[in-house]
Length: 303
Image 1 (cartoon, rainbow, N blue to C red):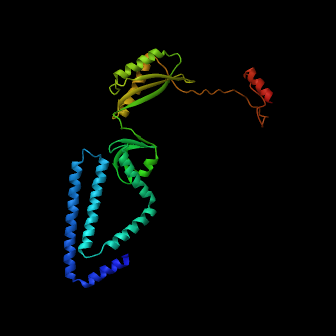
Image 2: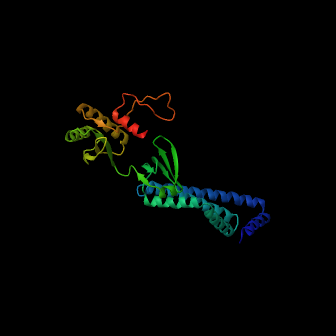
Image 3: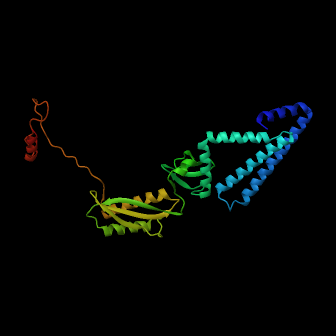
């Protein structure tokens, strides 16, 4: 049966049936549909509680949504059947419409499929802090089409699942502890053994730094700034900013006390005094008498 036959069937039944009977059937069908939906809502609530400890929050969410929509579809089919309407044409039309929508909404379908991959792979869960390319935030929900984040500056971000599947994803809170690497340079005259002792002492005294794994001191390189040093400490993942701020403040304070110089890249700019003749127009024609002989010689060669 095609959609036109389906519509004609409805019109014929409305004409043949007594209006009072139509009203009674409609009311009874709606009441049964309401009961069916309530049963499925109760079912999703009971299953959600029973499987709360066995399933992740993402899978539990998908299960509840699947039960809810199944109940709605069954309720609608029951209403049509109770009204004496043949639903075979409606199901066939729905299948055709589904195929058309599938081609028209390829991005949405791709995000939906990616959502199933995310749920099955479980690279993160609700409440984790993640980084997707340059975006960072806490996961608020994992849906079929997208992942919702709350950034650290309290902004709401929606990322399509397809984008997350293709991007470089970092789960910042996957493990209970993390490592902080601090790079800086000290002067070449610095006693590196003493610098190491100072850094290890301040790491042991810092309340956020863990003793196990132990802090690590490394000499990284020698360059124009000085001796490159890397200090690595482990900390609880919940205290990222507190650990970094306190360790940096301790390093600055202790290095000042020990007279250990922190170096940085320097740029020296030199100037050569010169006097321009009023008669010159195209370039330098007369140098000041105080200019070094070597500079004067170079200028004379250029002229």
